[in-house]
Image (cartoon, rainbow, N blue to C red; front, side):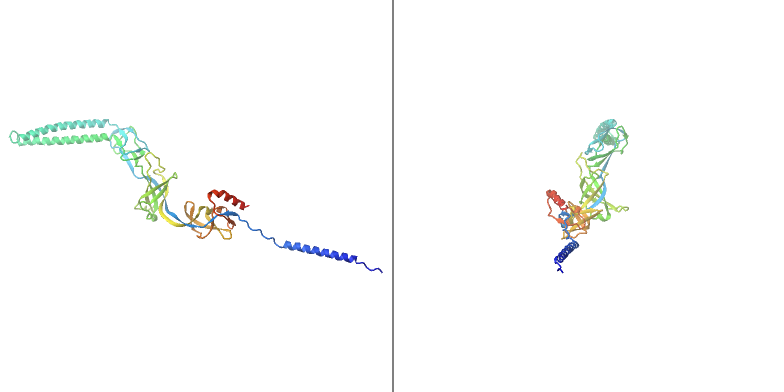
Length: 391
């Protein structure tokens, strides 16, 4: 009998080794698949600048509404009676000086009456001279007995009466000359004509309004202020008035009304507005509605840059930057504004770091990169680096 060979046994051992190696490789692959991959480091969403709130002195103001009106109006009327208006020399908007002729009436009748009064005066003066001469002669004959005492008294009385007639004639002449002066309607003061009712050819009676003018061109703002705030205002307080055109005017409180309207509980504050130069156009017109504010001093306030405040859905927010570079959205209440600084009245602590440039593009929980604040001319480079950070 032949002895079995060892070749099949070697082949079997080799096959077992190959299977074992394959199993180990498959186990290693499965182990690698079971281990979770390591997370990639988070990338910042944006590069921003940061700042801390600061204490600033902000002006304290009191807002009010009111109307613009003339400081004083002057009514220019007719003093003549039964005269015809022959010429009107001014129109609405014209600046006039005190004593300027605004209109003229027909002067033919007053001139004739002046001539008649002057003639009456001359007649009275002649009669008075004759009476005075008779009285003087009577006095010289008083002791001679040529004239009785009664006759002498008549001469003396006639002299006194003639003097009175001369005075009456002079008064009549003055009255007629004054009436002649009424033929010219003159401005009682300097100012601007605001209304005209004079019509050429009209025969008006005494006291009829012909013109209306704003004295000296002065306007005032009559601000309506609540009763609780009236005590905060004093004569001399500075005020800024914005008329309908949007041009600000700076004025001064002249007086505060001593009474309050019982229906509205509002009081009037009279503010003198700057007077324009004669002939110059003013942005304020009498009858305009205007809003304004009164300067009441300064007070300390917590302020942040305006760029740090983000308005979303009618609410104001800032983004606080944490030590880990993540931002937290915080709702704040804002108040006054001065330049590029905004007052924060609630919702922010003074030591909090907040995002400034780029805050409008942030969301709650975003990771940011903090950069040094750049000057205005470096803003494009800042924007470029921020956009690169988002890629």
